[in-house]
Image (cartoon, rainbow, N blue to C red; front, side, top):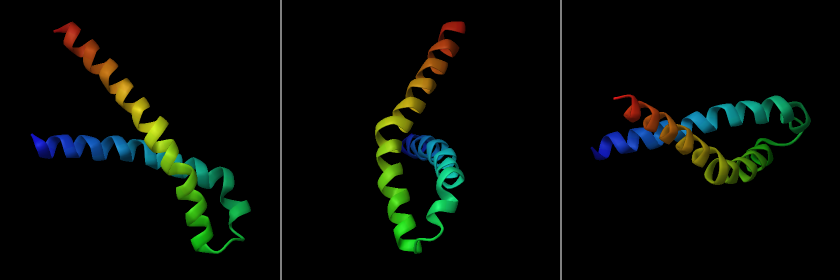
Length: 75
């Protein structure tokens, strides 16, 4: 059961990280391309980690709870 919970947590984080990083690079990739890699990485992490922790994962949790509630009601 513990492994299943860890897999679900990893999936929720990934489901937020992938589109967030993709959007970040789509919107800011060219302007940031002039910076060294370590500065681009710093800007990426300093902006996306709070987004993921405080907004992205809680949003995914809420959506998953809504889906689980609907599934349980239909049984």
